[in-house]
Length: 451
Ligand SMILES: *Cc1c(COP(=O)(O)O)cnc(C)c1O
Ligand SMILES: [Zn+2]
Image (cartoon, rainbow, N blue to C red; front, side, top):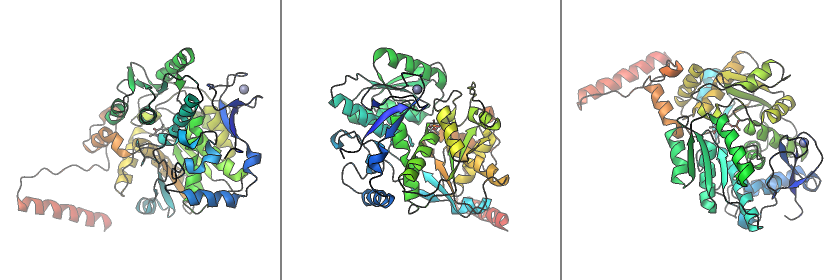
């Protein structure tokens, strides 16, 4: 794999290449975002059919590390890591769920949910973190001194960082906004031995602090300003077309907070197109919570400007971000992909989760934002009912049990949620008659509903 190469370069177009083993996050010329660029000329020596075949041959097999769906695309993701330095927990290969029943309810036959939360730490963050922590291991192997790796997080990035660092034997430091993440998300980095800093601020405050510390103390920064993570996350787009035998869907709907994931999705599609792996692009819809919607506001002004806001509290806590790091990349992606942005209120996202759950899913609140956005985009005719639509589910619902239980107990008054799809336990004496009555009541109610 020696011929394949990749490096950091300025996303805004300044000259200069920087090796992936250099500790660098922003362009030294303009201070803007970096991106990982691949030596496309070498990759293009092989036709698209070669790459499709290679990726299929490796997909979910056992040859280390290529069974991981991130490392199975290694030439296109991060060719500079030795296989021995890869830190992998068998990423990707997540279910592409045919949402037959939910789709039928909204008139869309071809609705699919990419279950990125069915993964080692329960969110898509694993896809990027395997690349970043593998690069750290490679750098240490090459003699770079990295005393610790740190991130600010709305909960899932820190869980992923802690797990991969624990496996690699590297100290993780996580900056969390106090009382703004779920119990499971707090527990995960604790269990994996991370240094957990619980700070009296919001995510944007944590982000500012971690950047300052990393800059001064030579600690490696693991937030998505570090564009290595984007390389792993872009395999979402590769894997989902792979799961359709390399056919491109019409729409991808994705929840957005810091906006690294939508940028990754777009990069994956564009590189596949450049290599002849696919021959067209999908359209992309980003879904934001009404309480944290800077991209939606920018979309309403045709992306003429992008202004950070102060994010308000939302049940979709992982996307409660007012000053997204990858705003500029996301806007570039949306312009290229005929993109749109839709937003969801707390009521809409909570009901969307419960409605999806009734059809067999177990959605997290962020996926609920995406579903609620989808319902609106269908209603207004932006997405046609005949189109093939994929919703990116970003985390496992089990990480958000407080939210889900709060909904069914009707305890989400702080967010003014009135649960339309509530399902409560029926408390009964242990008597056969009472149990029989309860079952018959439910069956009757169902029959009334279906007519
Ligand atoms: C990180 C995260 C997001 C947002 O992804 P960005 O890349 O920050 O836009 C959405 N949902 C969940 C569950 C997340 O953990
Ligand atoms: Zn620059």
